[in-house]
Amino acid sequence: MEKDTIIIGNWKMYKTNKEVKEYLHSFTKNLSDTNVQVGFAVPFTAISLSAKELQDQGIWIGAQNMNSADEGAFTGEIAGKMLKDAGADFVILGHSERRTLFHETNEMIASKVKKALEEELKVVLCIGESLEQRENGYEEHLEEQISSALKDVDKSKTKNIIVAYEPIWAIGTGKSAGPKDVEKTHLFIKKILQKIFGKTVKIPIIYGGSVKKENIVSYMEKKSISGALVGGASLKAKDFSEIVQLSES
Ligand code: PGA
Image (tube, rainbow, N blue to C red; front, side, top):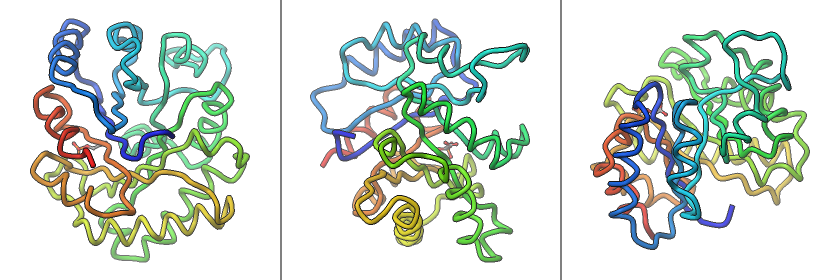
C-alpha cells in the first residue's frame, strides 16, 4: 500500500446509480490532493459506474462480498473475476453483517479471501467480537477469525490485505470503541499477523464502528490505527469529505 492512511466508505445496501453519480460529483469536487487513500465499497450495481466516474483519481472502488467459486450454477452470487471485470480494486470480506445475518463461517471467508487474492483484488478482511465475546476472552475469538482466514495465504500476497477491526457492538450503534482500547486490540492483531507471516509483515489495520467526523481524529492520532472503515457517516459526501480531510497527516 502506498499511502499511510486508508479511509474506506462502506455504503452497504444504499444508493441507486443516480444517487451514486450525484455523490461522486460532489465528493470529487471538494477533494484536493490528499495523502489519504480513499475507497468506496459500493453496491454491486454501482461498481462499473463508480469506476468510470473515478477513473484516474486514485480512489479505490470495491464490493462488499463475493463468492469463492470461479463461476457456476450459484443463483444470485457473484464471482471475484466479475468484480474485477466491472472495475473493482478491492472486496470487503467477513463483515459482521455477512457473518451474522447471512451465516458466513470462518471457512467460507477463508476460501473467499483465497479466491479474491488470486483475482488480484485487495481484501479488506473484517474481524470483530460481539459484546458477549468481549466479556469472555475476545482475543481468542479474534485470533481464530484471523488465522482461519489467512492461514493459507502466501506472504507475497499480504501487500493486498487490509484488516478491519470492527467490534460488532460498535457498528451502526453510535457506540464507538475508545481509541485507547482500539489501539490495544490493534497491537494484539499485529502480533497475530506477525505470528502468521513473520515479523516483517506490513498489513494495515483499520478501525470500524460508528466512526464519524467528531471522533475520527482521536483514532488517527494512534499510531497503530492505519485508517477507518466508515458506514453510516460515509453516506453523505460532505460528511465523508470532512472525515477524509481530518485524517490527513
Ligand atoms: P458504521 O458501520 O460506521 O455505521 O458503524 C461500519 C461498518 O459496518 O463497516
